[in-house]
Length: 178
Image (cartoon, rainbow, N blue to C red; front, top):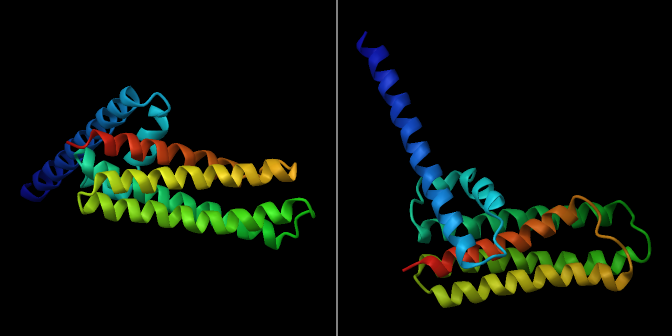
């Protein structure tokens, strides 16, 4: 009976801590959206709430670091998509855009990683600058496809939208840090 009670209490504690984390994520995402109208609250809660490190990040600083890590992950997914598109022998007009985006997404991932490090070191203006760079470089990938006159292929288009949004979210959350 004692083992069963211990199991039930442990499960209840886990559920309560998950609800607290979800509430912290939701509150932070809503505050970020209130400070920057470009923030997609649903995407913020979904991406940050599902990240493994959000369990330990109960404040704006911790969630800004989580958002930066989400950005790294997403930039890596975008880079992998570019590589897959290049391997699929794209049309002639798409090749230069893919080559440009391959370089850009490596840089985007590094910008997010550097932002994480800057937040960790309490250098918030430098972190914000890195997040702005990630946003600008992601938008340059969009521009490369527009210049080539071709549409961004899926799933790269989705990862590009997510990278843009995560850069905005991470920047808005970083601005909330007191």
